[in-house]
Amino acid sequence: IGAVPPIMLKTDAYPGGLPMDVFDGIRAAVLADRSQFFKDLTTPFYGANRPDAKISQGMRDSFWQQGMQAGFKNVYDCIEAFSATDFTEDLKKFDMPTLIVHGDDDQIVPIAASAHETVKLVKDATLKVYPGASHALAETHRDQLTADLLAFIQAYPGIDHFNHQYAHALVIHRLLQVHVQGDVAALGKFEGIAEQVGNDLLEADRIGLDALWYPAVDMN
Image 1 (cartoon, rainbow, N blue to C red):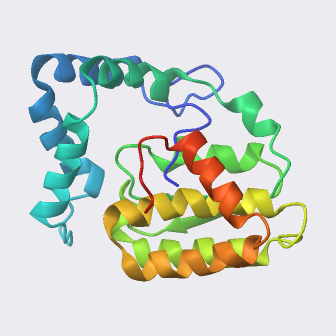
Image 2: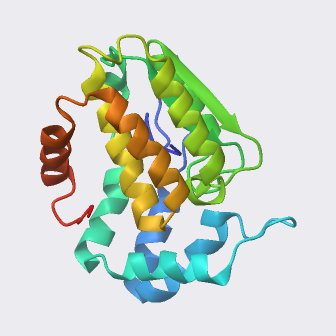
């Protein structure tokens, strides 16, 4: 969902990527004034600079608060991680149906150098493009995203057998998102599909996945 692969940085293999000076500028802004950087970042992140944007101040304040909770070094180091990590070979190894979702007005991770390239590398990949959507489509298009994820999971062959773990991982990921955002309706829908994925392993798997992936999150 709005992901950076194959690689954000401009390289010989991916000439459509962003030049290094873009990321050097991000590093400089973080060092100079991390708080103001996160406030400024909400504008392109949510597409608040578009004429028809309907982004609440509360949403932008929440983004700033989450950013400020991260450790300074972590914020700085992650710039290299998300910009210069090349996922090309990893993407070629995907062996399950994969849903790629991206907004075509993403000002943070431009779709041309990310989703459009990723779908060429992942076997059996489906790309859903949200017209006019920003990088924050998990918040701005939550209902559409919820419906699309449910449809994808339910259409996945073998979901009731040996591949239920894969679908379960998607459910847990989205459950975390809607839980944090307080989307009660979406949370209820995903709890329902999670039951269908594997009643026999639901509790054990859910506890295991939460403990492994999200040790600091209380899903209760």
